[in-house]
Picture 1 (cartoon, rainbow, N blue to C red):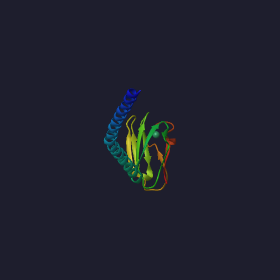
Picture 2: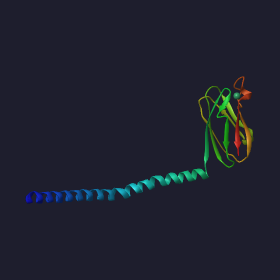
Picture 3: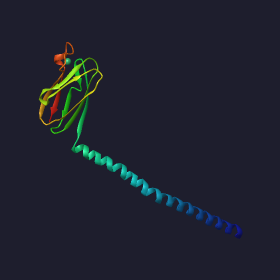
Picture 4: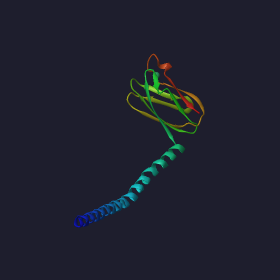
Length: 149
Ligand SMILES: [Cu+2]
């Protein structure tokens, strides 16, 4: 009885010793990995939030527009006054044009070749965007809208 009690106590002691060793090992691991992971987390999130803040202030509003007989898609572009606007317009069938008179925009769109149009929306109002290259029977009705709020 006594011997088995002693060996039981020894066993418990060894187990405690082992588990405390294991815990110590884990704690040191956590201690070394934790600062690294928090550092990388802040490193990753900071530039992203800064980028978002910059975008909010000095945004280039980009729109991809498809031109085809006899429409622009999307037909309506809405931006705020002062926005920098980038339109990437691509004809997917025949040659078209993209024109907004009030903004001095008039570009020829050859099929399959994206044309990038950049301007600052410094005039408020609703402006007609229209096809400026004769493209077929519906040419005159090929229109879109630029809304600057
Ligand atoms: Cu046309």
